[in-house]
Every structure is written in structure tokens, then in C-alpha cells.
Image 1 (spheres, helix red, strand yellow):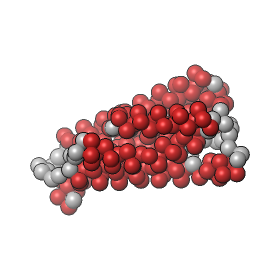
Image 2 (cartoon, rainbow, N blue to C red; image 1 turned 90 degrees about the vertical axis):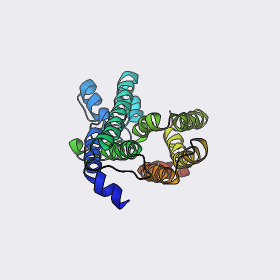
Image 3 (cartoon, rainbow, N blue to C red; image 1 turned 135 degrees about the vertical axis):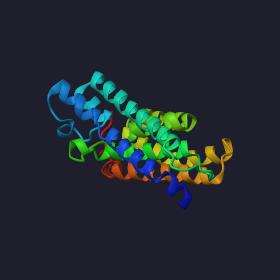
Image 4 (spheres, rainbow, N blue to C red; image 1 turned 120 degrees about the vertical axis):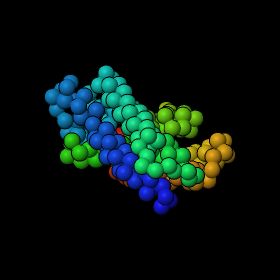
Length: 223
């Protein structure tokens, strides 16, 4: 790990900064201001995410928000992988895949930027769509399995929040199982990917804490 930080620390910091700034571009806020000249955080749940946009602004703004949130994840993950593989001060021959480390790091900080956007007073969304964008690039099999689980839960309960929470719980489990027993990757890679996804899952669930309270009390909004 020390060797990795010595050789890749600067690239890792640049990756985190660029990804955070990328995530800070809140399409829910931008799209809503374009359509209604208002702030999406003043509507409904107050969340700067596609679900709240759908409820308060309609289908087209929600679709544009979704596309934007997915796209910024794609860009951050791609740039992160590129930076760590190309910006090397010295050769690194450790067990970690530099491209994977850069991509997962970028995905994490893009999600943090989405939740706490620099450009919008650090009040953003819950990171669900941004997480999906990251996973579609980095592990599409796990992403599609959890997306299917999300859809089933939402269809059965009509609660997007519950689907998001259950999918978040499944993220580190799916990542670990696929990296270890489907892709048969080295254990340092397995544990690194699982740890990053675990952090993301915890943050996403914490961001849904008010939804959890409403689910338990039977007052959660449904679609």
C-alpha cells in the first residue's frame, strides 16, 4: 500500500478532485431551473434527484436528470481509470489494478459530489442514479441484477426509496461475490472494490434515513 501511495498518490488526489467536481454538477437543480425557473429543493421531498423531479416537474425533466446523472458517473469513472494508469511517477507492480482503483475512487467521489455539490451549497441528492451509472461501467452484471431487484421492489411496494435501500444493501454483497467467485480476481482487488462499494452503500442508506423513518411509520410517499 505504501508503494502504491508513493507512486500514485498525486494521481489519486487529482482523480478524487475531478470526480467530486463532476458529481457537483447537479442536473436535478439545473434542469428544474431551466424548466420552471425554481429550485427542485423547494419542491416535494426537497431532494435533488430524479424521483423528486418526476413528481414535481414531469417526465421530460426527470428523463433529462437521469441521463445527466448517469453521464457524469460515466465521465468520472472513465477519467479516474485513465488518470491512474497514465499519470505514474514510477512503475508500480503491486497486486492492485491501477485502472480499477482510479475508476472506483472516481465513482465514490462523484457520488459524494452529487450528494454534497460544491456549486449548489452542498445540498444535493441521495446518489442512487449516480451509483447506478458507476456500477454500469464497473460491474454491469451486478448493476443489472440490483436494478432488477430495485424494479421488483418498486413495482410491489410503489416506494422508490425502499427499492433504493434494498439495492444499496445488495451492492457490497454482489460486488464481493462477483469479484471473488465469478471474476476470480486477486484478494486485494476483491477487498478494495468491496470496501469502496460498502462505503457508498452506507452513505446512500444514511441519506435515506428520513425515508426509513417514514417507511417504518407507514407514511412514505408512493408513486
